[in-house]
Amino acid sequence: MVAFILIMSGLVWLANNTVQNLSALGKDFDFGFLFNRAGYDINQRLIEYSNDSTHGRAAIVGILNTLLVAFLGCIMATILGVFAGVLRLSKNWIVARLMSVYVEGFRNIPLLLWIIVIFAVMTESTPQPRDFRGPDAEASMILFDSVAVTNRGIFIPAPVWGPNSGILIAVFLLSLVAIWAFRRYARKRQEATGDILPVFWVSMALFFVPAVLFYFILGRPVSLNYPELGGFNFTGGIQLRNSLIALWFALSLYTGAFIAEIVRAGILSVSRGQTEASYALGLRPNRTMNLVILPQALRVIIPPLISQYLNLTKNSSLAIAVGYMDVRSTLGGITINQTGRELEGMLLLGLFYLATSLIISGLMNIYNNSVKLKER
Image (cartoon, rainbow, N blue to C red; front, side, top):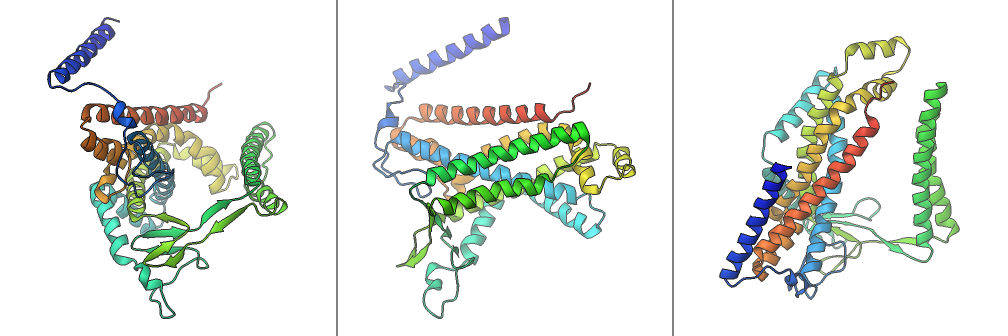
């Protein structure tokens, strides 16, 4: 309590001293600038925005862009990390060495360099939009002429939500709930009786069948707007800019290399006798990994994995190197330069990263408590 009182007293003194020094310089401590006109454009956005919008809305656009690349990066990094971590333990010498090259290569080169390299490759090695024009075009769209890969980004079809599309979304969400409930039931039944239900195939059926049936029953409420070449660039669809893709791939590959080592260490922490005992009981290797090794390895994997998710989220602030407009570029960059509110802007920026980190840590700790080994 004494330490807490001393720390809080010090913080209060610092805040009061800061306000007094600002007043002496003719500056006040005010967040009213968030309601002023921003006056700048944001190239990648998830919500409606124009240069007539406020600085507050520009900050929200940057926050959503940061959360987008962090979410995509965590998913892709986890997949790559688990895949590479398991393959590093492969008995195939070539596969194990290739994964070692990937892990050591990405871990020992700064992330900023990987972001710039991937951005340069995507910009310089992909065709220009004009290369898609005419019967003698040097480039062509892929996936049944629905996706265009250019030096300005990747253009993909955009969904067009029509009448009854809300019902279709509700059906899909109910399918996800049904998958979760069935997997939980199957796990409890296996623990009680030993019977193994076809969880994978039932989950796939619940994922696709209800949504597809209601899609046709409701009269195809969702359609696609395909990108088309018009003028000097593609129009329609969704444009994924090279800055977003480069940042996403670099963060995923870089963090995935660290996750691979975490997964490898977690698997190696399980005694080899556990594997041999499961084989002696007749379990196949994949069942051994899912039922014996991973449940015990997760208690070693999850805590450092949380740190990697936090690092990935904070490392997304390097987006400014390739022009991706995240919260560091909007609120912590252009807004501060235009308004001169550097203290307020940096304070809000720090609070955003703090809140995001605490939320990620809290959710992962909840998952960690759910998968930890429970003794009788």
